[in-house]
Image 1 (cartoon, rainbow, N blue to C red):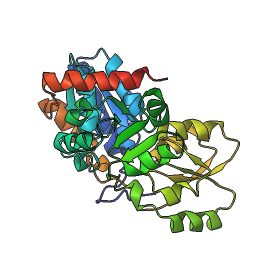
Image 2 (image 1 turned 120 degrees about the vertical axis):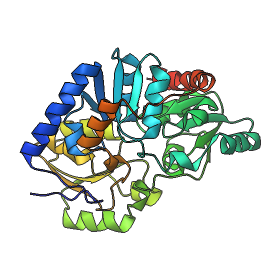
Image 3 (image 1 turned 180 degrees about the horizontal axis):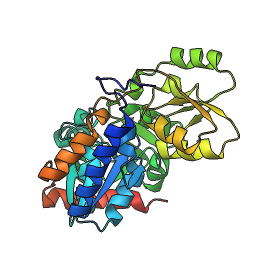
Image 4 (image 1 turned 180 degrees about the vertical axis):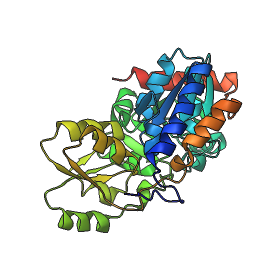
Length: 316
C-alpha cells in the first residue's frame, strides 16, 4: 500500500529505505550523534530516531543528552530549544526550511507591545515560539503542561502567546484572566466541527481525541483533549479499540505501531503539516555529511530563554 503524505511524499520500497537507514546509522556513529524526532515526522524519519516525542518530551530529552551532536528532525523552534538547553552540543536541523508558521506569527517586538498593554500580566510563551520571544517571557509551556504552568504563576492575569486556540482551552480550565494573542496553528485550525460530527456518524463507537490547538468548537465535540504524548498514553490505556484522531497525521504511525490491535482514523485529510514533512532520510544524511544547518542562539538571548524553559520543565 502506498500512503500519500502530501507534497508528493509517499512511503517507499523497503530495500531503498534499508539502504538509506544504513547510511544514516554509519554517519550517526561517526559524528557521535543522537537523532531526535517529533511525533509529526514521516514514518521513515521516526523509525531512525533514537527518541520520538512531543515538544515537552523533546525539550526535556535535549537538556539531558550527552552527545556531541543532536540531529533534530522537527521544525526550527524545536532545534532552537535544544540549542538553548544544551549549548555544549552541536545542534543540526535536518531540514533548514522546516519552520513553524505559528511561531512566525509573533516576534520580540510584538511581544513587547503586548507586554506594555498588559503590564500586570504574567507572560506565558507556548514553546512554539522563537528564542527571542521565549527570552521575553516569564515561563514557557507545551500543550502537555500548559494548564499547570498557568496555575503555577501568582499573577491573576496571564498574557498567553501565540496560540489563541490553546489559550482558549486553558481559559476553560482556570479562573485566571487569559489575554490571548491571535496566533494559531494553521494545521490544527483547519479541522472543522462539521468534520468531527460526520466522523462520529461514520464511526459511532470511536473515541474522539483532539489536540488543544484545534478550534474551540472542535474541542467541545471531543471526548478528550490531549497533547500528542498524552494521546499515545491514552490510546494504550483505554479499553476502547477505535479512535478518531484530531492532530497532525504523523502521530498515526506511532499509534498504529504501539497499538497494532487497535484502529485509528484521522478526523480530516487536511491534518498535515507541510513543514514537518520536509525532513526525509536524504535530508538527514545530507545534514550529517556536511554538518550543515547548525542552529545557534546568541548567548544573551539563550540565557533568558533558558530561564523560561527551565521554569517550564520544573512544573510537574
